[in-house]
Image 1: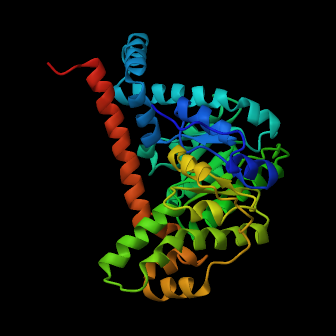
Image 2 (image 1 turned 90 degrees about the vertical axis):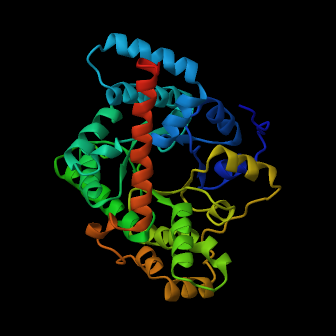
Image 3 (image 1 turned 30 degrees about the vertical axis):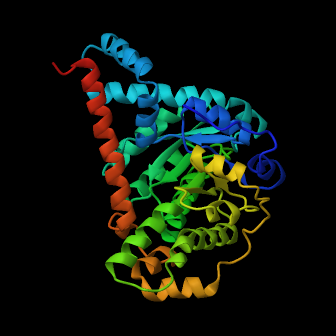
Length: 361
């Protein structure tokens, strides 16, 4: 893998060291993560798509490891073996982040592990796996989707002491419901006299995937207003959610993910938030010459918001805090598309393990 030389004077590093805004790497690939740390990254993430990419990027190593795991676990199926590899990929990345974990007293320095998307209909299974993942290393943070079942699992996992990173989340109502679920879990712990000194909770808003869905609706509904407005949909939702988080005093931070443009960097600088772009976007930002100034408190042009709000019904669902109930989260277009992508990555990982253990003739 060829990477641009990282720079210790990166504007991303300056941002992390001089503002409340921090950088996490949207990959657990060890080569990318080491370079991202040089850019200032103090966290990282993994999900089924990322894990599969990491395994394919070093396939000889992981193929050999799959065969070893199969010999050690002679009755294990493809899925079980694949997820054992995902654990090892994640723990390798978590090790690289331990210095940041100590420096930031657990607020940062965390590696996000995602629960198996095949459990998306089973709150107990999600919470159980989250608790298991949380015990693998001191700096693991666990991802559960902001679906109807996921909200239930998020509360239970937070109650059990799991540090949460809510995922499959694209809208203001989803991130607010998720933050409220974390609060309920923490309050249950407090009522029982259990520790709530677990400062690392984050709630993801996948800004770029909301933009993607707005662009699909723009085309399907045959709109003709300025298409540049669509690049602001995720930014507008994130800023709206940020204000609500601060107003309500949630004990979790927002995390921006699924990058599609530079606005998802420059518009959030200065906020007490996590920015988690893929490494390729970090390279673009570092080479941009942009000196990011705090803009989190600068609102999106009201004309843009008003146009999106008036023209695209799904933007209203995404932007209004009561735009959807948790029962409606699963039917939002971006939720369906993302869950299907994660489920497909699970199936592809099964196939990769199968090809290693039972090669085609």
